[in-house]
Amino acid sequence: MLKIMYSLLLCLSVSLAAQAGARGHTYQVDITNLTPGQAFTPQLVYTHRKPNPLFTLGEAASDELAQLAEGGDTAPLSGLADGFADAVTTNGVLLMPGETTSITIQSNPGRGLLTVVAMLLPTNDTFFALNGVNLPRRGTTSFLAPGYDAGTEYNDQDCANIPGPLCGGEGYSPVAGDDDEGYVHIGNGFHDLGDDVLKPQRYDWNNNVAK
Image (cartoon, rainbow, N blue to C red; front, side, top):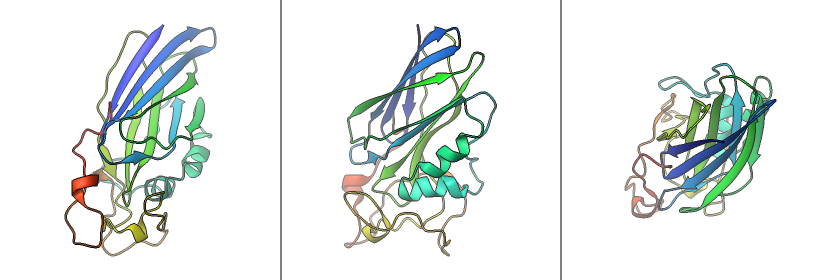
Protein backbone atom coordinates (compact mmCIF):
# COMPACT_ATOMS: atom_id res chain seq x y z
CA MET A 1 0.00 0.00 0.00
CA LEU A 2 1.33 3.42 -0.99
CA LYS A 3 -0.04 6.66 0.35
CA ILE A 4 0.57 10.27 -0.61
CA MET A 5 -0.77 13.45 0.97
CA TYR A 6 -0.90 16.81 -0.81
CA SER A 7 -1.44 20.18 0.79
CA LEU A 8 -2.64 22.89 -1.59
CA LEU A 9 -2.96 26.63 -1.24
CA LEU A 10 -6.28 28.30 -0.62
CA CYS A 11 -7.17 25.71 1.91
CA LEU A 12 -7.15 22.57 -0.13
CA SER A 13 -5.87 19.28 1.19
CA VAL A 14 -5.01 16.35 -1.07
CA SER A 15 -4.05 12.87 0.07
CA LEU A 16 -3.29 9.98 -2.24
CA ALA A 17 -3.25 6.30 -1.40
CA ALA A 18 -1.77 3.96 -3.98
CA GLN A 19 -1.85 0.18 -4.25
CA ALA A 20 0.61 -1.64 -6.46
CA GLY A 21 -0.69 -3.91 -9.21
CA ALA A 22 0.64 -5.80 -12.21
CA ARG A 23 -0.42 -2.98 -14.52
CA GLY A 24 0.69 -0.09 -12.36
CA HIS A 25 -0.69 1.68 -9.31
CA THR A 26 -4.11 2.82 -8.23
CA TYR A 27 -4.05 6.07 -6.27
CA GLN A 28 -6.70 7.51 -4.01
CA VAL A 29 -6.57 11.29 -4.03
CA ASP A 30 -8.25 12.98 -1.06
CA ILE A 31 -8.81 16.72 -1.44
CA THR A 32 -9.81 18.95 1.49
CA ASN A 33 -10.80 22.58 1.04
CA LEU A 34 -9.08 24.60 3.78
CA THR A 35 -10.25 28.07 2.78
CA PRO A 36 -12.73 30.04 4.90
CA GLY A 37 -14.84 31.32 2.02
CA GLN A 38 -13.85 29.80 -1.33
CA ALA A 39 -15.34 26.79 -3.11
CA PHE A 40 -13.41 24.54 -5.49
CA THR A 41 -15.05 23.83 -8.84
CA PRO A 42 -14.98 20.22 -10.17
CA GLN A 43 -11.40 19.02 -9.92
CA LEU A 44 -9.46 17.73 -12.93
CA VAL A 45 -6.95 15.01 -12.02
CA TYR A 46 -4.57 13.19 -14.34
CA THR A 47 -1.44 11.04 -14.17
CA HIS A 48 1.34 11.14 -16.76
CA ARG A 49 4.86 9.84 -17.34
CA LYS A 50 6.66 12.75 -19.01
CA PRO A 51 6.75 16.35 -17.75
CA ASN A 52 4.01 18.38 -19.42
CA PRO A 53 3.55 21.50 -17.31
CA LEU A 54 0.04 22.83 -16.87
CA PHE A 55 1.58 26.31 -16.69
CA THR A 56 4.85 28.14 -16.10
CA LEU A 57 4.97 31.01 -13.63
CA GLY A 58 5.66 34.31 -15.35
CA GLU A 59 4.36 33.06 -18.71
CA ALA A 60 0.95 33.40 -20.35
CA ALA A 61 -1.70 30.82 -19.48
CA SER A 62 -2.93 28.52 -22.23
CA ASP A 63 -6.44 29.08 -23.54
CA GLU A 64 -7.45 25.75 -21.96
CA LEU A 65 -6.20 26.84 -18.54
CA ALA A 66 -7.89 30.24 -18.94
CA GLN A 67 -11.23 28.51 -19.55
CA LEU A 68 -10.85 26.60 -16.29
CA ALA A 69 -9.50 29.53 -14.26
CA GLU A 70 -12.23 31.93 -15.40
CA GLY A 71 -15.18 29.58 -15.79
CA GLY A 72 -14.40 26.28 -14.07
CA ASP A 73 -14.65 24.38 -17.37
CA THR A 74 -12.48 21.24 -17.16
CA ALA A 75 -13.34 19.91 -20.65
CA PRO A 76 -10.68 21.79 -22.68
CA LEU A 77 -7.83 20.80 -20.33
CA SER A 78 -9.19 17.27 -20.05
CA GLY A 79 -9.18 16.94 -23.83
CA LEU A 80 -5.62 18.24 -23.96
CA ALA A 81 -4.49 15.77 -21.28
CA ASP A 82 -6.09 12.86 -23.14
CA GLY A 83 -3.29 13.17 -25.68
CA PHE A 84 -0.49 12.31 -23.25
CA ALA A 85 -1.84 11.22 -19.85
CA ASP A 86 -2.00 7.69 -18.44
CA ALA A 87 -5.41 8.42 -16.94
CA VAL A 88 -7.70 11.46 -16.76
CA THR A 89 -10.70 11.98 -14.49
CA THR A 90 -12.89 14.85 -13.35
CA ASN A 91 -14.45 14.85 -9.91
CA GLY A 92 -17.74 16.67 -10.41
CA VAL A 93 -18.07 17.88 -6.82
CA LEU A 94 -18.29 21.57 -5.91
CA LEU A 95 -16.05 21.38 -2.85
CA MET A 96 -17.08 23.83 -0.15
CA PRO A 97 -14.86 25.20 2.66
CA GLY A 98 -13.89 22.49 5.13
CA GLU A 99 -15.17 19.63 2.98
CA THR A 100 -13.19 16.63 1.72
CA THR A 101 -13.66 14.56 -1.41
CA SER A 102 -11.86 11.49 -2.81
CA ILE A 103 -10.85 10.53 -6.34
CA THR A 104 -9.36 7.22 -7.50
CA ILE A 105 -7.00 7.22 -10.47
CA GLN A 106 -4.45 4.86 -12.02
CA SER A 107 -0.88 5.36 -13.17
CA ASN A 108 1.16 3.12 -15.44
CA PRO A 109 4.19 1.25 -14.02
CA GLY A 110 7.30 3.31 -13.44
CA ARG A 111 7.86 6.81 -12.18
CA GLY A 112 4.60 8.71 -12.56
CA LEU A 113 3.52 12.33 -12.22
CA LEU A 114 0.28 13.82 -10.92
CA THR A 115 -1.53 17.00 -11.93
CA VAL A 116 -4.59 18.36 -10.08
CA VAL A 117 -6.37 21.63 -10.88
CA ALA A 118 -9.62 23.47 -10.09
CA MET A 119 -10.97 27.02 -10.03
CA LEU A 120 -11.67 28.92 -6.82
CA LEU A 121 -15.15 30.43 -6.54
CA PRO A 122 -15.92 33.28 -6.24
CA THR A 123 -12.84 34.67 -8.02
CA ASN A 124 -12.16 36.15 -11.44
CA ASP A 125 -9.43 33.72 -12.52
CA THR A 126 -7.81 32.06 -9.51
CA PHE A 127 -7.09 28.32 -9.41
CA PHE A 128 -5.16 25.84 -7.32
CA ALA A 129 -2.90 23.23 -8.86
CA LEU A 130 -0.41 20.47 -8.36
CA ASN A 131 1.66 20.91 -11.49
CA GLY A 132 3.14 17.51 -12.33
CA VAL A 133 4.39 16.36 -8.91
CA ASN A 134 6.02 12.96 -8.42
CA LEU A 135 3.75 10.09 -7.39
CA PRO A 136 5.19 7.99 -4.57
CA ARG A 137 6.45 4.46 -5.03
CA ARG A 138 5.93 3.83 -1.34
CA GLY A 139 5.22 5.66 1.88
CA THR A 140 3.62 9.08 2.32
CA THR A 141 4.50 12.40 0.70
CA SER A 142 3.14 15.84 1.61
CA PHE A 143 2.92 18.97 -0.56
CA LEU A 144 1.84 22.57 -0.18
CA ALA A 145 0.30 24.33 -3.18
CA PRO A 146 -0.67 28.00 -3.48
CA GLY A 147 -3.59 29.61 -5.20
CA TYR A 148 -2.50 30.86 -8.62
CA ASP A 149 -3.85 33.72 -10.72
CA ALA A 150 -4.11 32.91 -14.43
CA GLY A 151 -3.52 36.55 -15.35
CA THR A 152 -6.27 36.37 -17.98
CA GLU A 153 -8.89 38.55 -16.28
CA TYR A 154 -8.71 41.68 -14.17
CA ASN A 155 -9.44 40.96 -10.51
CA ASP A 156 -12.35 43.34 -10.08
CA GLN A 157 -14.19 41.02 -7.60
CA ASP A 158 -17.41 41.99 -9.41
CA CYS A 159 -20.12 39.31 -9.51
CA ALA A 160 -20.96 40.37 -13.06
CA ASN A 161 -17.63 38.82 -14.11
CA ILE A 162 -17.64 35.77 -11.82
CA PRO A 163 -19.59 32.56 -12.58
CA GLY A 164 -21.00 30.05 -10.13
CA PRO A 165 -23.89 29.69 -7.70
CA LEU A 166 -23.07 32.79 -5.65
CA CYS A 167 -22.58 35.29 -8.48
CA GLY A 168 -23.95 33.75 -11.67
CA GLY A 169 -21.91 36.15 -13.79
CA GLU A 170 -19.81 35.75 -16.92
CA GLY A 171 -17.32 32.90 -17.02
CA TYR A 172 -14.59 32.63 -19.63
CA SER A 173 -14.05 35.55 -21.99
CA PRO A 174 -11.65 35.08 -24.92
CA VAL A 175 -11.13 38.83 -25.24
CA ALA A 176 -8.12 40.10 -23.27
CA GLY A 177 -8.57 43.29 -21.28
CA ASP A 178 -6.13 46.16 -20.87
CA ASP A 179 -5.88 45.48 -17.12
CA ASP A 180 -5.21 41.73 -17.38
CA GLU A 181 -1.78 40.82 -16.02
CA GLY A 182 -1.04 38.56 -18.99
CA TYR A 183 0.92 35.87 -17.12
CA VAL A 184 0.40 33.26 -14.40
CA HIS A 185 1.43 34.38 -10.92
CA ILE A 186 0.79 33.61 -7.27
CA GLY A 187 -2.71 34.76 -6.34
CA ASN A 188 -2.83 37.78 -4.06
CA GLY A 189 -6.31 37.24 -2.63
CA PHE A 190 -9.15 39.72 -2.22
CA HIS A 191 -8.88 43.44 -1.52
CA ASP A 192 -11.22 46.21 -0.43
CA LEU A 193 -12.26 47.64 -3.80
CA GLY A 194 -15.45 49.43 -2.82
CA ASP A 195 -19.06 48.87 -1.83
CA ASP A 196 -20.35 47.13 -4.96
CA VAL A 197 -17.98 44.15 -5.14
CA LEU A 198 -17.13 41.07 -3.05
CA LYS A 199 -15.34 41.79 0.23
CA PRO A 200 -12.03 40.41 1.51
CA GLN A 201 -13.48 39.95 5.00
CA ARG A 202 -15.42 36.95 3.71
CA TYR A 203 -13.64 35.72 0.59
CA ASP A 204 -9.93 36.45 1.12
CA TRP A 205 -7.36 33.72 1.80
CA ASN A 206 -3.71 33.44 2.71
CA ASN A 207 -1.63 30.90 0.83
CA ASN A 208 -1.37 27.99 1.24
CA VAL A 209 -4.93 26.96 0.33
CA ALA A 210 -5.09 23.17 0.54
CA LYS A 211 -3.81 20.28 2.60
